[in-house]
Length: 109
Image 1 (cartoon, rainbow, N blue to C red):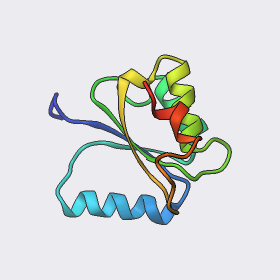
Image 2: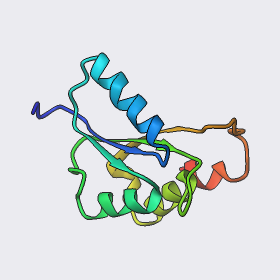
Image 3: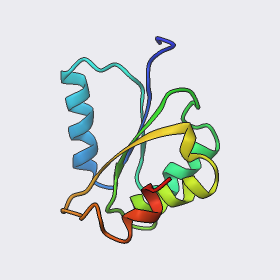
């Protein structure tokens, strides 16, 4: 694989959404390796144990999940010093206000 390829971690509890992303990547000829975690706890384990290679990490993150949601994962990564090792793109199944108090601790520098 190309040394400049992204290591993509898709974090989503909805199997249909996971399949949709995988199909979209295939249709767009995106050949990057996609690792999948069903919630924030699984994602955290993959990121802590290098289950996802440390170089060029991109996390596609659902915010609304059971056990550990996306905001909780972001705050945990930040607290553990792992937030700098990846770029995070988030999505939510329902609208969220970017100014909501829950977003501030997870995203502020």
